Image (cartoon, rainbow, N blue to C red; front, side, top):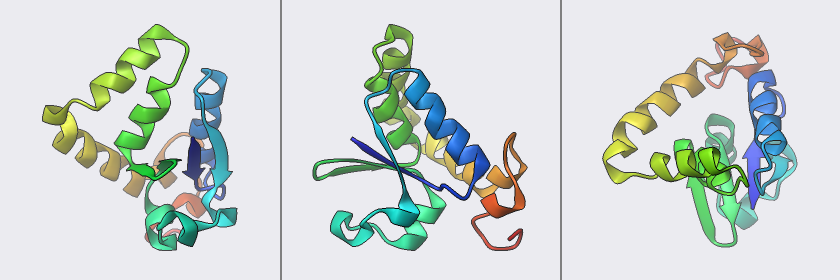
Amino acid sequence: MILLYDADCGFCTRSANWLLTQGCNVTLTPWQVADLPAMSITEADAAARLHLVDGTRVEVGHRAIAMALASSPRPALRMAGHILFVRALNRPLSWAYDFGAKHRHQLPGGTPACSIDGSQR
């Protein structure tokens, strides 16, 4: 599974690397060097949200996190990943992810370069 993250964002890089330390079965790839057209992902979409690509399946935002966590050898993280896929939680988790992504430049490890709307760059 390929996890596309924003390598220009300290918060995103730290978060992606944390998934590796938890044994998640992902290959970290900065979206800036990935072949996005081959994955049918636009640069704007890749810059705005985390993407996890597994063959032809593409999960975005909180669902990408869920899929990564579900691949962990740690039972608690696998369970958390499965919980994040619960359909009833999709709307609030999507909103929470989008809110966090919009404000990632203000999160721990974030810098003005992390801003996705260009106002902080």
